[in-house]
Image 1: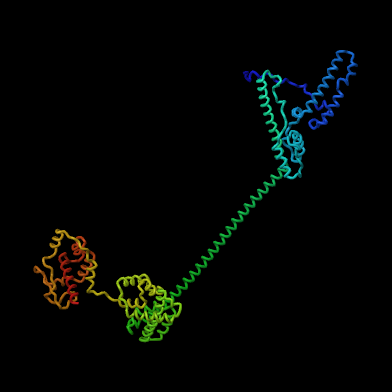
Image 2 (image 1 turned 180 degrees about the horizontal axis):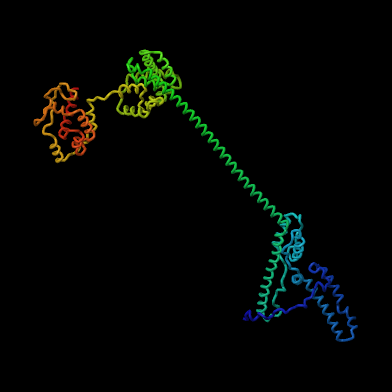
Length: 578
């Protein structure tokens, strides 16, 4: 099979310059050309054929005398008539006419730029000229300055989807009639097809360039873009302005909220300051009246008139308000001696009587009694019955309650509003204010029994039982003297030092001195130092007696042990006597 190189130069078209004829001109349709209708073509052909038929021009041949000239004239007449027939055959056939019109003379120039006012003058003819190639007819007009934008968009939509019927036979490089074989002809068709496709692409690119240039410079499109841009800018500015106004509004609200909060804080601070000043003023007046009451009641308290004590005055100071204290002090100023004491006693008793129903009512409210909201008289009668039965069956104060009372007095010192009610709630054992005041006189103010101090000390310091080794026990036996002083069980009273007055009460082994001589050797300072050392160094302390002896001036370990045994026996004997 021959290769493409074999056919590369075979069958190419020859240059046809000067050989092409104008079919429309031969038929007298040069002014209409592709606009000529089929009827016009037929009528023009009949006229041209009659005019240029050889039989009609035979007279011209007879006029020629020379045979050569006559033959030339005859050939010319026949050629013209043949050209007219060929023109008719081409133009009357739609396919041949479309191919001929595609190769007809045409201005392919595309406008590139123009002034805005000359747009329609420059691009209008270009669109009209290229509209002849459109498959879809009629082609929309470019319009004018005031054409609606809908029509303008439709125009450019038509041209952006433009479909051309234009053929490009002149782009064919090879003449199929000159093919040497079937393969050679197929190869020529493929080469011509490629050239035609390339020519079509170039044609569509040319049309697209025309439409793009017109769209960019169309004053109607430019005006709409400017309006859209201006509208977009206005929308952007409006959005920015709205956002700015919103931020300003938010800032204003925040500022108002801040000012409002500052104003509320200022008013609250002023109210708190005023309230604090009022409270301080009330406290100052209360302290003044209390001081005044203490000053006026000082002489009768110091003289114990009517058994009036300082605690009674303090009770009144704690329970009475400022106005009550002022009125009481005004009454006391006009009295002397017993009269003042009687007023204080009466005020204390009246306050107690007024406090009892209040306390009972509070207890009833805490217990959830339904009669509180109803009949007050019934509640008060029940409170009196409860108080009466409570006084008859008064419970003794336990150690935990006493500790709570002490802690409450430290936690709520003098000057606390409603101090004793607060302490009663702090104890939490349903103790009334009267019981607490009574305990203040009987329990807390009672001095501890000195006879039981050492036993309580020993009970507190009693160590846990441990198992001592035989070596440790032998060491303790070696440290203890051979014979511990013994106290004779006698019913005789003890002296101030806790020993019996009998001279032979104590017997010391191994010729030691008597108990009276031993007691004379111990001074009060030494005894106090011994007791303090025993508290500081309990029984489980290592080298306890050496440390105790070091803490007692002028005494050895043996002396300290003997004195400890003697004091222990004295406390036991005194307990048995009682």
